[in-house]
Length: 284
Ligand code: C2E
Ligand code: MG
Ligand code: MG
Ligand code: MG
Image (cartoon, rainbow, N blue to C red):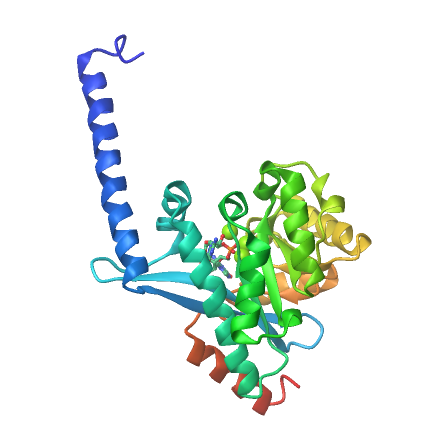
């Protein structure tokens, strides 16, 4: 192929490969430093009850405050961190920090708030995730019922017996488990009855155009019905407009998350928002 395209094309390919490797090596060492220097922070995005409008919890979303690059979004470094294994220490920190923050909110009197934390399938390959959860709960004294762990459908590609066992141990602690980005992963629906699940999160790609696009709306409604038939709580992600929210409520979605209710924000802003909405009577 490279030969048929002539020497130039081959050289171009070679250069890109070398460049890729150099970029990876640079990112790898920056990520290692980031862990050592504690350059990660968590932002929190509200999750709102569809029926009451009350903020019932938050999703913790990772941000890297790089001295060289400024705030870096997870999409720019997590795929590499999953490839090079750095996701393990990074996500261990995320879990501990999110539990610590949730406990701090409870101590402030915001006792009802639940914290959702994203997990990576790589963690289930490499470490005992249930033991990590036990450790984080013990260290922070967080009520397990106030912790929710988000997994993606791609976790099914891992050794599913081992994953099911780990998830069952976590569920037995009283921690809830959500399927994130539902409908976008590489898996059949078969896992949904075998895994100890509590919630499904309808991916934002279906919510985005559901008002204009009848097929997307049908998918959203069908996923909501599926979730409810299985006894699961249904969460909608990426809710940006009132029109979307109205349809999602009509379709029976239980929990809403998206820019309409708040972007991911620093902890202080989040607690201020919760307190302010409580004062004006939006929350209990
Ligand atoms: P996710 O878990 O599906 O999180 C939702 C993403 O959608 C977040 O992007 C959030 O900022 C964005 N979002 C929320 N509402 C809206 C909206 O109304 N409109 C639009 N356009 N976007 C919205 P973010 O923070 O960049 O995170 C991207 C992904 O990175 C997350 O997707 C999650 O898969 C992953 N991630 C984030 N933090 C962690 C972490 O601590 N550990 C792991 N393993 N993955 C993480
Ligand atoms: Mg998530
Ligand atoms: Mg998602
Ligand atoms: Mg996502």
